[in-house]
Image 1 (tube, rainbow, N blue to C red):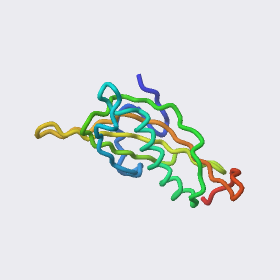
Image 2 (cartoon, rainbow, N blue to C red):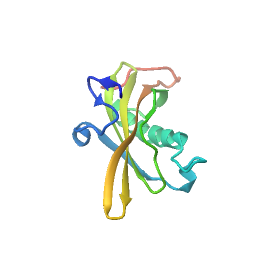
Image 3 (cartoon, one colour):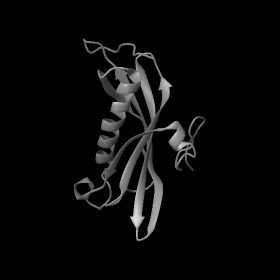
Image 4 (spheres, rainbow, N blue to C red):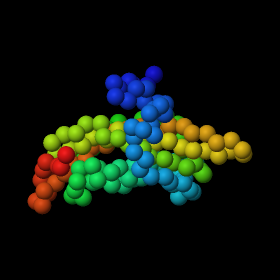
Length: 143
């Protein structure tokens, strides 16, 4: 059974409030170079897409481009991504710290098979970003 979070609810299903409470970050098409040896979306590729996309939202929210990724929380892969899937990354601020910001991230896929379209959450995680000063030390960000 999936872990429950008071803010997020059941994390293995698409949140009912996704389009109102989360920010759409990016969309990627799964292509051959993104696949692992068994024909599924390589987890490292997905992490790269997450970090690049969510970092841009962190810069906007934190009011600075001088940030670093401090931590990827546990990544839960509910379902595999497949060749031709349209991968959507969504996030929202979960915790606002003094020097950091934690984002609740959801990864969904849209699949088109024949005349049918389906949408499914395939992964969730948290990512923590830290604002840095000019010397590379953690600093308070603009709230």
